[in-house]
Amino acid sequence: MANSKQQRVVLFSLLILFSVALTACAVASASDEEIEGSWESSAHADAESRSFTRWNDEDPPEIPANCAKCHSTHGYLDFLGADGSSPGQVDQPAPLGTTIECEACHNDVTKEKDSAVVPSGLKLTDLGKEASCIECHQGRASSLQLNEAIEGLPPDALHEDLSMPNIHNNPAGATFHGTLAKGGGEYPNQSYMEQFYHNFDTCISCHDAHTLQVRVENCSACHLGANTIEAVRDIRLSNVDYDGDGDTTEGISGEIETMAEKLLLTIRLYPLTAEGVEAIEFDGRFVDQAGENYATWTPRLLQAAYNYQYADKDPGSYSHNPRYIVQLLYDSISDLGGSTRGMTRP
Ligand code: HEC
Ligand code: HEC
Ligand code: HEC
Ligand code: HEC
Ligand code: HEC
Image 1: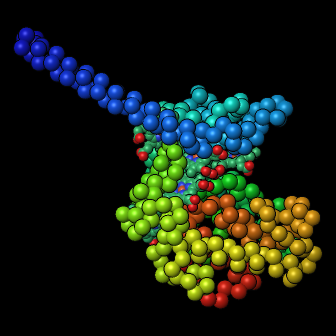
Image 2: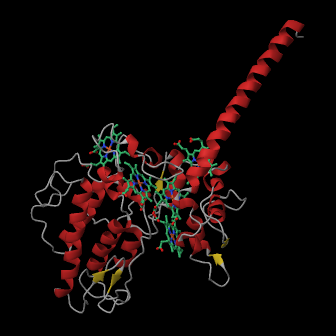
């Protein structure tokens, strides 16, 4: 049984604990306001964006189950099973009117979550707090869907019923994990970069989790002078001239840009060599000369075009996994019969 001195000590300790807890709450709620402001300034909170309004005029006005996971809080909670439904799938269309809100990322399921399955069927593990980022920023296609479309077909023969698997917007999470995710259209018999191992190797070490902005103030410690987003685009460590333009001082983003331009040129020249294949252009998607969705694919053309589109859809690829993207672009140029003279495959 406790004597009165012991009781006083216990009481006193409880009092201290209580005031510590109170102080902690006060600190937490002050920064909650800041966090709320940060989040409100972000694309995740932009209720006017097409990402959240695309379905407003549909009948019925709701977000279909196959879109809802990444385009609404309800859909993501449904996917996680945080609403009591079964995890790993979206069971029903989501109502309109949400963005990517606090509870999408902060709930009992995300607390424990540290893996994500990507469109290739591969499971990325040991992810930590960025597991949710990767669920939504993983794209919607991969080597798997591409191979399912073209496997076994003669590479240069026209197939009227081929269509391009749609990688969709911003597959940063797939790019970042390279061949562990297989978001790109990887060629057989080639090996590809795994994760871009970098001291800053989670989404939220480079992006603020709430504003989503690149935390450029963290880059210049190692990349001299890289303290604006423009200067970050000039970051370069490698002295290999990947794109073969003789310039090894431009940012690694410049190497990727030139390689992508060369791939697009190779894609546009390819129809001259393949029978029945119409002229091809790119304006955000691949089109024929009438501006209609491109329809005269050969398997070889489809894979190269998929990789071009992949690079186009991830504008941050130079920071997400520069050498993975360079490998895909290089292999596509080479496979289509373009010249890789002067270029180097990492
Ligand atoms: C795996 C997650 C995911 C799924 C599933 C998904 N999207 Fe998206 N979508 C995104 C992300 C991420 C963005 C925003 C990329 C950015 O702005 O950086 C986006 C952007 C968009 C945009 C705005 C940009 C634009 O192209 O106008 C529209 C519209 C859109 N998606 C439509 C759809 C539709 C329709 C579906 C279902 C058929 C769908 N999405 C399924 C992740 C997804
Ligand atoms: C897209 C996912 C996402 C959304 C939406 C989001 N958070 Fe967070 N939040 C995170 C992640 C990830 C961290 C961990 C950040 C870190 O460790 O750098 C975090 C951290 C926090 C923290 C801990 C303090 C800190 O800075 O580490 C608080 C509190 C918090 N969030 C509150 C909120 C509130 C309130 C909202 C809505 C206004 C919100 N979050 C929206 C992902 C999100
Ligand atoms: C539930 C799905 C979902 C989750 C989880 C999610 N995002 Fe997003 N993210 C989106 C959508 C949808 C958009 C596009 C919003 C818009 O168009 O306004 C977006 C936009 C972005 C953008 C801005 C792109 C641009 O065009 O400006 C960045 C950067 C981003 N997310 C990073 C992250 C990070 C980092 C995390 C994890 C902390 C994360 N996202 C978690 C769905 C998600
Ligand atoms: C090494 C730092 C780094 C890491 C790690 C990183 N990013 Fe990025 N991210 C960037 C940079 C730099 C940009 C491009 C900004 C620019 O040039 O405008 C970017 C761009 C983006 C964009 C497009 C924003 C836009 O304005 O269109 C999205 C979405 C995104 N990142 C999501 C993610 C996700 C999700 C992860 C984790 C899988 C991640 N990023 C990991 C640095 C990083
Ligand atoms: C602690 C040191 C450190 C910090 C901080 C750092 N980096 Fe890096 N970064 C490196 C190293 C080391 C490499 C080389 C990695 C390699 O080649 O595999 C690198 C490579 C890169 C590359 C590729 C350059 C090339 O030539 O291939 C980019 C882009 C990059 N970092 C962006 C960023 C961004 C954006 C930030 C800030 C958000 C950042 N880094 C912060 C150390 C750092």
